[in-house]
Length: 157
Image 1 (cartoon, one colour):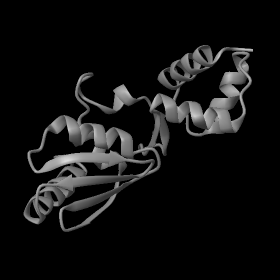
Image 2 (cartoon, one colour):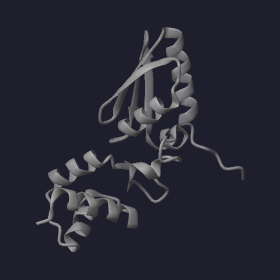
Image 3 (cartoon, one colour):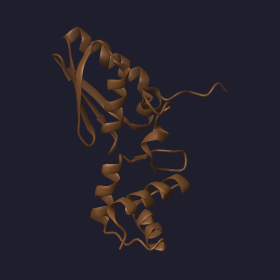
Image 4 (cartoon, one colour):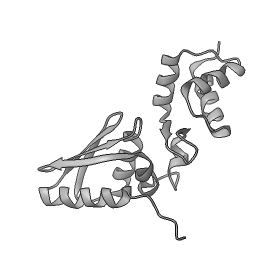
């Protein structure tokens, strides 16, 4: 039986080497390596590792946190939001940003890394982020900026 650390390392390696579309596929690949894991444990491991299932042209695939950012030290909001964004709304000084499953953590980290002066802080769950802004006016600027970042980059022809 592999230790938790060995199992998680195997998960990272498999996702890096293969385009993994589902937990079941990942579980089978782990089993081929001699690592038996339940769906619940695998789900927990993916969450702990910060692995997100992101949309691609070939369908949803698991992606490592560092592959979703342009710079290892700073997550790239311009890359993350078009892939993970679902909806944004707000009231008063509060912004609620919805993402696809497992998208909230990397986006919140990227927003924090941006250092927007209008944002006092972020709180992220599984697929929802609460942003606390300095004012209602700041909230409107932040929502506009988020919507702008969330637009997919269009090809030039």
